[in-house]
Image (cartoon, rainbow, N blue to C red; front, side, top):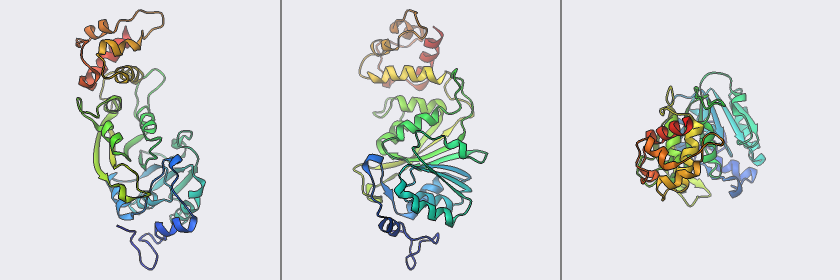
Length: 299
C-alpha cells in the first residue's frame, strides 16, 4: 500500500514519504543497516501494536515513517536517535509539525544514553532497528537496571516493540528445543516475556531486503523470571551455545572458575545441578541455565 495522499499531502499534513525521499535525495545505506518503511498504514499498525504511547525512544528513524506514525497514534513525546545527517531535514519537518513532541538526537545509538532525554515516567522503545546493531541493542536493554553486582532492578523501559530480521525475532522468542533457541532466548526469559506479533514482507521496504522482518515485543516482569545474576547467566549461556553441538561437559569447560585461582570441572558442576553432563545446550530450559549460573557463581 502507498501513503495516504490527498493532493500530495499525507494524513498528518506532511508530504508523502516518497516525495520527502525524492526531494532530499535520500537512499538507504547498507553500511547503516537502513531499509525505509514508506507505508504509513503499516507504520501506524506497528505504532498501535506497541499499546498506549507516552514517552517513546525510537532508534534509526530514517526519513521518519514510524516517527510520524507514533505521533499520529498519540505518543506524547518521541525521542528519535539518528546517526545519518541526511535524514535530519525530513525529521526537522516532522518536529515542526508536532511542536514539543519530538526530540531529535543526532548520533550513534550505541554511544548515546537515550534515557538522558526522557521527561519522566515509563518509557517504551519502538523502532525499526537497523539490522546491523539490533541484537546488540536488545542485549543492552535487557541489562538495564542491573547494577555492578549483577543485582536486577526495574528497567527504565516498560515495553520493547521493535522490527528485526525474522530470524533474530525468532531467536528472541524461541522455545526450548527449537532450532532458533539459544542464548538470546534465555537472556530475554530472564527479563520477562517475548512474543512475535506479525511478519513484514520485504516488499514493504525501500529498498526491499533479502529477508522477511518481524515485529517482536518484550515485556519485563516485575522481577527477573530467573533466579540468578544476569552476568553469570550471560557467561554460562555464552560458553554453552558457543559450542552448542558439543555435550555440556565439554562446552561449559570454557567457563573456568568463577573465582580466580579456583579449580573448575564442568562435569562436577553439572552433576551438582542434577543435570546430565552429556546433554546439549538446546535441551536445557532457561531455568536449568539459571541453576547452573547460581551454582557456578557460588562455587
